[in-house]
Amino acid sequence: MKIIPKGINELTDQVKSLCIKHEKWGKVFELTFSDTIKNALVEDEHGIFVLTGDIPAMWQRDSTAQMRPYLIAAKNDPETANLLKKVLQRQFFNMSLDPYANAFNQTANHKGHQDDQTKMGPWIWERKYEIDSLCYPINLAYLYWKNTDDTSIFNNEFIAATHKAVNTLKVEQNHVDSPYTFERFVDRPEDTLINHGRGGDVGYTGMTWCGFRPSDDACVYNYSIPENMFAHGVLLQLAQIYQKVLRDSDFAAKCSILANEIWNGIQKYGVMTDQSGNKIFAFEVDGLGHKLFVDDANVPDLISLPYLGLIAADDPLYQNTRNAVLSKQNKYYYEGKYAKGIGSPHTPAGYIWPIALAMEGLTNSDKKYKEQILDTLVATTGDTNMMHEGFDPNDPTKFTRPWFSWANMMFCELVLDYFDLRVEK
Image (cartoon, rainbow, N blue to C red):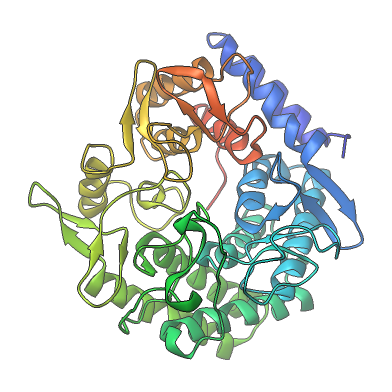
């Protein structure tokens, strides 16, 4: 797509006028905010396909994050709202194809990881099961409704897809009964599941099993706490939709019951003690006594919980967790000459992710803190004026992924947030 909706142009002009004291912010915002519309969207009979950037596939997670800031314009602009509706149409088309897949092809072209040992198909680019691939589109639909009052998206395709999503989350409470397995025969262990593709042993917790992290790397322990917290929050949003809009009290109750079971599991199994003796959220657990504390740059992660509306930013348990995440207790927290922040095993050791820096700012109410992060982000683009996947904090000209639309839009959302322009939750 090349034509930029009026509401997005107007929002861009508004931000540029607010950036008088921050000229570099305005320059990078103008470039990145329009880039997704100009270069990442392809319309066809199934809606709008959203390229993740320099990989020719659509991730359910990435595409939601790429579109979310446009909700601010959609409130008063039908053209922008229609754009989002078409993305949602495609997301729920994808979900109906396969609720276990995380990334899809634009057509049934057999591209992607077709040699993986799992139930692949011509529409599927990758079939790494991640809870957030189900949660993100539902969350976007809910936010679209709340920001536009348009309920037309809650159609038969939405109903079919969300029934599949909830049934999948329910099945994966008892992964031993699941049909899902995944193996990729490569040297990188993070790209496959152990135990003949079933993952590590787990005990029943009430939480729902997760094969891979939002980084597309395999979980160490298969109950991801941020993923389960996201599932809890989204199931409650879905219950609202079914109760208030679709008038299906039975399915709304099913969503609420599952949400409560997951929440009880998080409370019972998902809290641990950090090196200072403080209670914090674990990152992953197995329900058998093993717990892992790290935080990965990809969202949902522990630091992003308030951004996703899952916990109050001033909650003591969250604050304890945040302090541990932004310290050497987190082995993916790095510091360098030009930046400090969270990285990921998905990129070279020591590399910091702009997504994680933006999330730091979005989950802190201090304007000075946000300003410092925005200054860091625009100073570490490697002279490209675009965000990347990860960069070397000692030499920002070294980075991964020259075109990564999710990171671009997270920067844009932080700029909007700084000027008190936010998506209504």
